[in-house]
Length: 254
Ligand SMILES: NC(=O)c1ccc[n+]([C@@H]2O[C@H](COP(=O)([O-])OP(=O)(O)OC[C@H]3O[C@@H](n4cnc5c(N)ncnc54)[C@H](OP(=O)(O)O)[C@@H]3O)[C@@H](O)[C@H]2O)c1
Image (cartoon, rainbow, N blue to C red):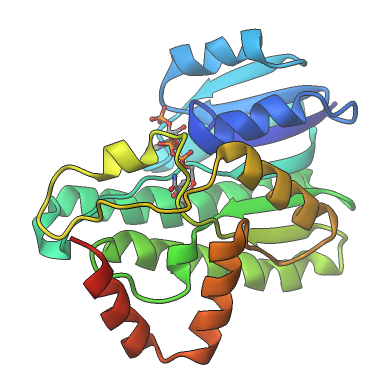
């Protein structure tokens, strides 16, 4: 049985990937991971192939053991792995609850890394892995600093893995989108904290991100920058010093 395993499938980007990949004849089942079981169950009414809801909190280590046990039992071929589970909190780093700062590291870094590595025995030649990072990975971003740092980890992790797994025919892509407007991310991240971001011009849609990311993954690219802003940001981050970019971004928030 060939599956797509998608974390963060209960909403936003993960859900959009699930709906899209369910139409791929090479995929027989979607394994959908997130905390909200009802939202995962609902996917069965929205997808074109069966969906297996796997309610897990990816900030918790027990969850990695539970997911591994399911894989051992079913022994599927993972055709596509998408690590989209993640969240952010906006505001100055000290204005954010320390528990939220720690949870961002747990879910965005440790969760994505643990899920990806534990899936390796079920990824074969031709399998694809998409790590959903962010344009904020490209330089320090005041006002969303801890979140941006977690995404820098994920981008670097994905690119290193791309190189390590290339020889075995497993394509790993770091997906670094700019703001996406039709997900729960921005409203959950904005809590009116001092120093928050309030303006999201040229924000993308989930469909735009899914399109670009799947095309780039199919081409075996190690980096996907959906949308013109993300592509320009990548070039800007190569040309300009981090300090200048961070100062510019600091002036743009608030
Ligand atoms: N929206 C943007 O502007 C934007 C831009 C660049 C990158 N991204 C990245 O895109 C990814 C998807 O975000 P989104 O925009 O689609 O936001 P979203 O609608 O809030 O989706 C986030 C997903 O992550 C899951 N999740 C959060 N904490 C979790 C945990 N502890 N354990 C398991 N699952 C957890 C959520 O499910 P439950 O709540 O049910 O657990 C949900 O399915 C994230 O990694 C985000 O950093 C977003």
